[in-house]
Image (cartoon, rainbow, N blue to C red; front, side):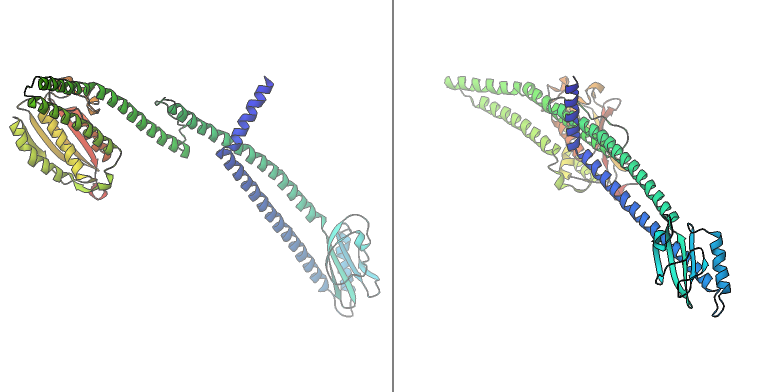
Length: 465
């Protein structure tokens, strides 16, 4: 069992190590640590320079103050000043020395060896003292004398050492936190990506209802997950639609194909009897035309759903489409003993394909004409609501039951009461495909009595109020 757990852990770590989130985490950890060390090195260097500069400035000011007490031929004030400074500090704190040209000590707390003028960093042993102190020392000449002023450098070095140790501890904490945080974030991101991969694997094996869990953080992974889920919903709808189409084709086209076969068999039998079969052949041709029309309609719906007509989109006035339908179908409705009238019109510019929009509205009007009884009133209206144009087709016919309103948009779906009338059951499927191509929302409602179909189109930006 321990061996299996070790093997599983090794495989998991190996998988994590190859993952993009882990590599990104490592990259950012390295960049963060390198940036931290560079920043620390710069700060340490600047602090070292600043402390050294302050120490040298202090030495310069003290040297200048001591030199100001000297007057040629009178060294008493100089000697007194230097001895006063030396009396307050031991050699471990500061160095003060005044010697003549022979190296004889005249004042101070130690006798400095001969040293050229300048600024030096020295140790106690360098100037003949005991201990391990370090000093910053300035040597200058005052008349015939040599003046040495030095300050203990250990305090500065101790401060720098404390800063360096603090930085090392901070660096250790930063590195540990960065590595731990990077691994945690990588594992968390990889877990979410694994859920995406698992969902897509389920979908590839036929579980089209699988969805990626949303964390609710609103981050980029959630955005991607939402978009993938939307695509999966669309895929599920399309696959179910294809299944439904296959089933409906098998059921709805079986009857006309059987009729065609029976008609052709009757024609063959009549021809064997040398009878006139022209009427049977004519009927077979019409049946074949109806079958071909059904397949052409299916192909056209598929092309529209694939967005093949979007390149023909341009600014289109729905009111102009309404005018064409009114002109063409008023007389058709009268011939069918129905009435068609336009109850409201307004300019409504949208981006779309005028031919498809005309066909969509024509299908809705033809459906009302073909499936409603004599005396039905059909009304078409166009209105604007904020940023949308609402196109409505209403009738006072028998309507569609609420439970059937979503189903009628399926390909080849027909209500039982409509199966005795001509048609393929593709008119409303085409309407929905055209509406979705134009990013429009289509709804069906109760006209009390009858049916009302409303389609909301997004207006062009300049048309919105």
